[in-house]
Amino acid sequence: MPYLPLVQVHPDIMLGMWKVEETEAWFLSRLNIYENEEQILESISHRVKRLEWLSSRLCLKKLLHISHKVESLNENTGKPYLSDNSFHISYTHSNLYSGAIASSHTRVGMDLENLGKKRNIETRKMFMNAAEQNLFDEAGRDLNVFFLIWSAKETLYKVHGKRGIAFRDNLEIIPSLQGIEQKGTVRGIIRENGFAKEYEVFFQFFPEILLTFTFDTELLQ
Image 1 (tube, rainbow, N blue to C red):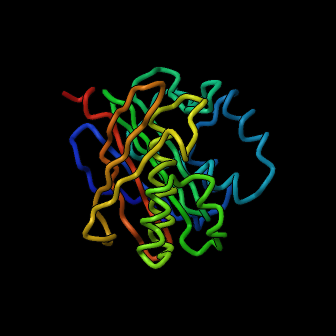
Image 2: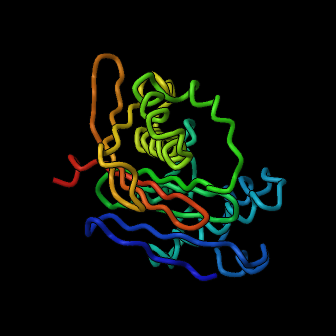
Image 3: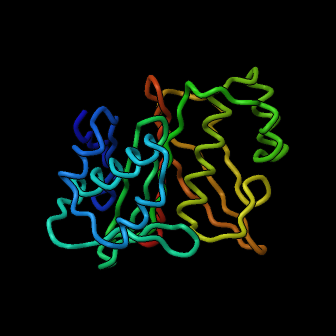
């Protein structure tokens, strides 16, 4: 399945997705993998994880029309960046779906969640605060609410890009009181050391996966 561009909510925010149906050799023939990237790929032994890694990189290449030499590397926190610092980027993958988001001016975050994966709802206590758990209960323990809160927090974690953030204590999701639709936005708040920063987290439910993404609007102004 070829690269699939997704709706742009701002001219400087570009994102795309890939459903992996190709082989590893197919991706390698279309990517320029450099030494540092080769080392990262060699450290991944699981076949599916390798395909997800490769497809997300090709997704970014299609997204940005990259033709010159530029490597995708990781900071010591795990946050990805381009060797020429031309764009802020974020990757995601889940169950042979992958995605990439980029901006030339602001920090970005993106997440995909496999809706078919079995989840133990008791894990909600590890990442939901009391208000979010109440919301989940009031929604009849709808798994879409479970997935949305988790994925939105993953996206906030990625846009923050630093260690030391606890999903339950430092990240807060406030969905619309009108309920969860197929697509829309939720408020996301990052709280750290007495400081709070709010984000608009976009989401869309597809038949097999949930997509969430966000960006730092202040840096676009």
